[in-house]
Amino acid sequence: MPTPARRRRAASLLLLGTGLLLSGCGLYPAGSGPSGSADDGPLTLGFVNGGDSRFHTCLQRSVEIAAKNNFARPVTANSR
Image (cartoon, rainbow, N blue to C red; front, side):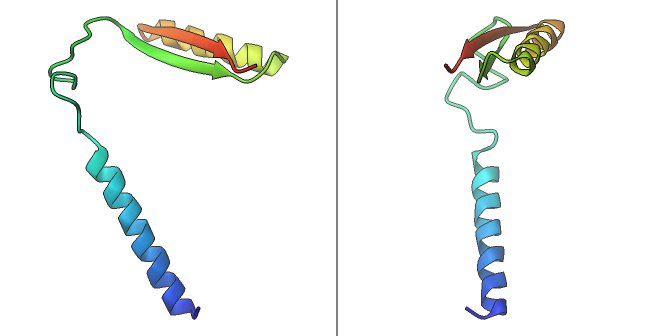
């Protein structure tokens, strides 16, 4: 494929991807968006940890602390 055709194809795929991304933003099922939230509880933050090494343990603890400091309820799981 010549270079100009590749650029056109890449540009059109980029535009298509951007359009799909932007069209999905802000769409909520009835009664569940930010203005009409059905859940009045705190925000829930999910984190799936991938191991038991020192790094993964420290990362999980940091996520839990950050969530609690920002009034979110952390839910963690280990993928093992």
